[in-house]
Amino acid sequence: MSEHSSESTTLDESHPAAEEVQSGSEESAMAQESPKNSAAEIPVTSNGQLEDSHEHSFNRDLKCSLPVGLGLSETKITSRGFDSAKEGVVEAGQFPSKGGRAQQKSGPVLLADEVKNPAMEKLELVRKWSLNTYKCTRQIISEKLGRGSRTVDLELEAQIDILRDNKKKYENILRLAQTLSTQLFQMVHTQRQLGDAFADLSLKSLELHEEFGYNADTQKLLAKNGETLLGAINFFIASVNTLVNKTIEDTLLTVKQYESARIEYDAYRTDLEELNLGPRDANTLPKIEQSQQLFQVHKEKYDKMRNDVSIKLKFLEENKVSC
Image (tube, rainbow, N blue to C red):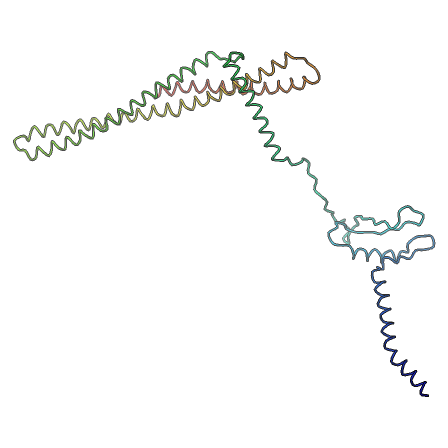
């Protein structure tokens, strides 16, 4: 009896420990089974096809487990037979919604033209400017050395030379008129002060009252006439200043643009002549065609600037007459 009671006592004491061991083993077994999704257990029929009810439940579980933002309206899981090369393929498609209308799927926007790199555009502009500057500089040096030919419009060049000579003369007249205006202003101011002094003396000197009064009136009259002359001179200065520093200057600015266009035209003309004198093959024909196009562009620019200079010279003659 004592042995039996001791064994029962031992079993009673070890029973909680056994329960703990058993619960621990159950928890580990649940932990091993927890990563498994219900989608992993897909019952199939004898011919290797998925049952319909389990297929629908599996699709629903997979749809809930998919993250938001994949751009898929509906997801369908299909299973092939065991003899098929592909098994468990996930097909994404667009299915009609409850309202009967298909949901519109947004996709990436494709640009028709690639965005140009600003750095490459600047580099291309610098390259064209450097090439154009080199050709123009070479043309100028060759003209000064007497090796290159230049396009000359004799009539227009003569008018430009006359215009530059006239500008120098008008600038000289303008400078002298400004000097005269300054001196005349000082003289009129002095005459006015002198007239005031004579008028004061005529009041204080009774014996010379008439003489001082006459001189005072004369100086005041001279000052008044001097102010009229000063106004006319200032108007003349303003007109000549407008003619020299605005009208003629604007025309000469157009002349400078015309001369730059002429240099560019001659530079590209020289290049085209050199290419035409060389051999014609598959390598040189594209260069000749490109040079011909550039020559035509600069020729049109040259003709346009020449017409602009002729028109402005004509308007300048009319403005000189009106001034």
